[in-house]
Length: 114
Length: 113
Image (tube, rainbow over all chains, first blue to last red; front, side):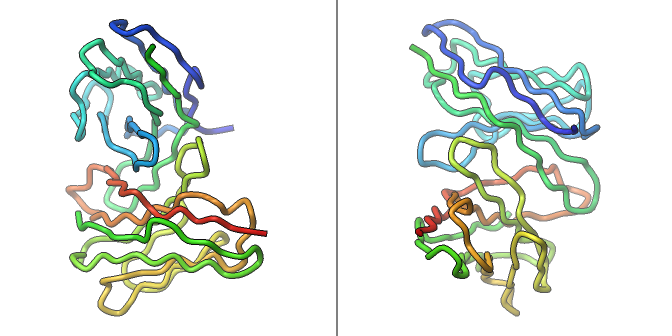
């Protein structure tokens, strides 16, 4: 089955520790995205990548880092510099092109920093 | 990308049609209207999109006014499983398209038995 997987579903970390969230897709999509969602709020874009080995900051990139070494993988690291990292993190992917591109979302990772 | 305005919440009786409005008065000619929904603690799911004409698929219908300043998503026979947050998003598609979606706070639809 094609889709996007995120792991783990729940993650607990101590304050001051870096943590890496996994996102993998087998849809052969060029573009991948990371969003953050806080309770009762919409999604906010952290980083996105349109091609391997290239990525751009979204609206709230501070305290986060990403890499895109393979087309199917786009891991997100939440660093100790992120002041309020507890949130629901969602990864998405889409094809790129001149026509509309539906974004497919993973199930999300709920990160809690203690 | 144009900004959208949606009511924060709506109720609908099971089996009845749910009509979710969205205002996008600053929409420009090359901007599409997209609808996604998010069931609690899951990733958002694409529902439908349109430019000028009304659109229908197996999930819903999208009615866009002639001036394109507002639209309505219609779920023809709402079920309890349609309880979710519904996001209306306006975005341009074209050579400058980065694929980014800008999510507002959406409308929380509660379908009641």
